[in-house]
Image (cartoon, rainbow, N blue to C red; front, side, top):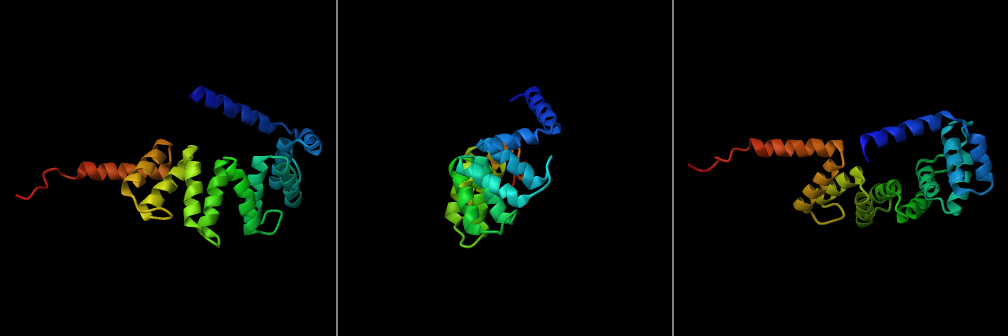
Length: 199
């Protein structure tokens, strides 16, 4: 995607965000449109162009997810993780993130990986599996996490070459920390004198 194309998309999104079409979205959501149900739920969750009502947002997300909205399933995962509009529930968060992750939603894949890394019961191998799925879709954060997993042996055997490969991949995708680390490694390698032979 070239810079002009990216700029045009950004301008279009900005213009769309200035228009309050919430009544039309609410009507489409009420008629059963899952994309509109997700969008209306998102607006209710954040209070954008409508009074904030997180409990009602969860209901719209549930309705949209039940009709196949992967974005709504990912949103439900976040709601159940952080207690937005509902009580936190690790089991339900994993369920909804799992539906979205299994459909290829990169945010849900990383969120589910985080669950398997941090929430009980942990499962490092499953966490790495979902990180890898997101990395294969071009997520810079996931590529960086894969590098860390191989460097530290988290959920996979320690493998320096694969760790470096994922680090390079993350840097190529624009991950700032990966870029910094790679630059430091390259500078350290360039600063190592080749004449460090025993005399």
